[in-house]
Image (cartoon, rainbow, N blue to C red):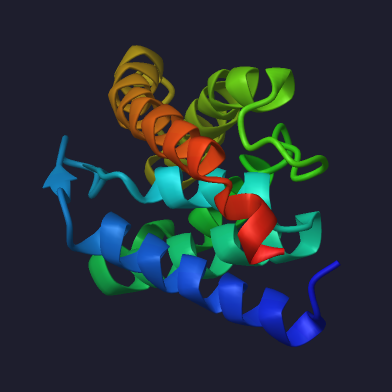
Length: 166
């Protein structure tokens, strides 16, 4: 088991990388609601496979929340909640980054994210008509993050990075 100091350091690194990959790298605005496509969820997914749950929840909340404060502040509260929820399907238990649960988890996270942002959009803008738009935008966003997650997770697993980290 890693020390609390090491876990906090990894949490900070993953949260910072999530901010950068969400707010700055490959940040593509879509729609008129302030939403955007990014690869920040990839870092949240990786953190969820490497760090114990409370630390992975912090990565999602801090990384996603800070990125939205920098780029689309009206979404920050919803994002903090949603990014914590997308961590839940993953598992950091065991030595494998890619196990059965973590292979399916990005798909479950897509539904959590799409539903969460649809509900947030209803609250923020009072629109119920955007269900298809919300889910299609989330599909592109979550799909891209999932593909990059699978590539990086396979690399982490084959290199034995998780064992070396902890």
